[in-house]
Length: 353
Ligand SMILES: [Zn+2]
Ligand SMILES: [Zn+2]
Image (spheres, rainbow, N blue to C red):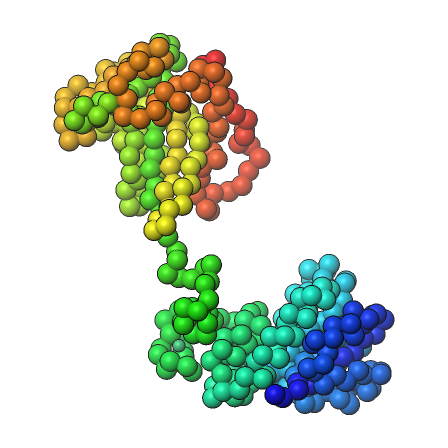
């Protein structure tokens, strides 16, 4: 296949590592610039510019980019990797494609460029004008060359000719190339995003009587904790209060969190938050059987151990609390835009002990 051209400019860098990369080396036509002027003279017709950094190297980068939009520019420099401002400047002002001080990563990028160049096809890159790319080459090319470029939305896909609804890069990644053909698995493929089902469970203890609130479930299935599925658009804390009211007939105050549970299944993810609560008043638990439950009652730790339960969880949480288990602050659970403050005490408590 074609031997791509690589221009190497290495002020003050040892390039022994690069010269040792036999496999990649052999497949590139490598031109090592002997000076700044030599590099400037050789700025055209390259597939790759691998460049160190000195005062004038950035001029070379700028010049090479101005003569060819589709050259892959990699800056090899330790300082550039450690300085976030310089790194950003290299990408945004000088339009480099990669900043690295990691030989294996550079080898990997060079292998990709090689695959792109050596597998020609009928597509052109809409961003840099790179010509004659195959479907797979375009799929490799887009993130390697343009990951930092502005997202393009609502364009016609050069491969399938469909008008893309979301970002072009996402469409290419999911619908074309080895992933699109189902030959390769993509961890973040759109189809693999699972549904999330959220549940609130409430472990409610009366601090005066040290009794626990349990719901008598349908069909003699035993006692269980108040709780249930979170409705669409509902805050999970509100769901916890609502379910406790519906199933046990009581108004409670959420005092903290006992546990978060995130359980991935094949088709969906279950999220459960186990809250710790205390009753707000001395009202009696619900006694009218209805759609939500047969009724509810207060139960001691001792009685709980010998009762018909729908499952072990009420007993487990009772034992946990009776043995001094921590209750974590409710502020652990919040919304994305909530201000981050130092004032919330993140100290676990179990006041009733
Ligand atoms: Zn391109
Ligand atoms: Zn397409």
